[in-house]
Length: 501
Image 1: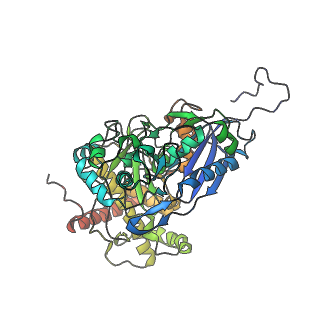
Image 2: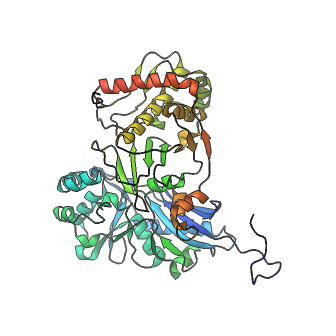
Image 3: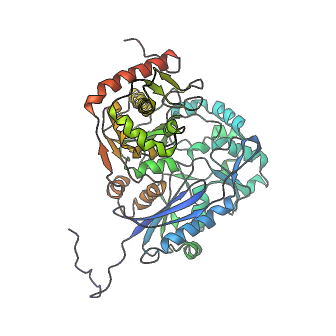
């Protein structure tokens, strides 16, 4: 029980002091969102402010006005702190999480010198190919591929097109720029946001050999620390603009995808989460680095030094994109009757990324569906088959996955789909109700302030959700359809054949 005895020195009849909270900031593509959360995970206040949409142009450019990041963040914080009982004085710490691979060229004073290049900017695809070649051994040891949109190549692009003396320039990820605004001084970056900029979390260094090969000035890149590390305290100017108390701790964040994983409660080795949004993403925690020769899986580093392997499919909720949203509830109800009579791989685009890599992959249906509900059920099962294949893939790499599997994303709101997934996988699914980036940022802010560790923060601050168990009577039919699914992927040459024996 919680004591109701007044604290020593408190005036009789005085209102209790407001509960301390932390603020988690999510800088997404179109908006900034802030959650103020207490030690029990209760959201005490929230705020939001819009950002300008990225501008897309020639050479694959995708840019945003970085000078808008701080005003939007300050406004979202102001709106949140104004809702708190002590008008923000109870905020103990703040952390910022943002999109992976978004960065901006700044002056030494932190002022943006050009628009920010976004996570999906492809202008430096050729330079990224050179980076892949120059650091091949390093990336192989890390289990990472430098893709066309990687931030590393864009840093090299800036080195060739800097609008100033290179000695007066620096590179900042979104949280680096906002951390400087919050503290009034330069801050370190975290090893999650730095990953796609070329930071090697295995060796704990920027890749000097690759930087030299791409003619990137080493002094452009910030020092790197683990997520959750104290980066400074809120300065007087930022306090006046945000409602945060001066001296409030600023802690390093993580990329949005990693923060969303933390928000599900999957923070300890063996815990994994399957996020079923537009695409399907599987992410988890391992004690040791897992490398995948196929390149389908890659790892961020956990704040505690463990690893966060994960992969993103091209299949997922998009499997239902051809359906009108108002049809889905009725189709789910009709599809409750039994497993599908046909097998579907509901890939709606060309190419698959995870759990196998094939540019030639495309969707198919084996057999003739009895009706529209039967085809709908087959589509739901097809995504579940891909999820099972993903789990089998990471287990084949030596990874232990503990039950239940955490799950989040819009697709997890379908009771039927979650039941199909649990039965196909043969393990319970724990549906996380609040897998938000801002909540993950709040967990990082709470680590070392409201709670002694990230595991303790997750245990106290993430909602229990509800668990969905497998349906034993449906398992044989789903196992049979899954075997047909894998056989067909193998026959088409998209999935490597299993070794004999």
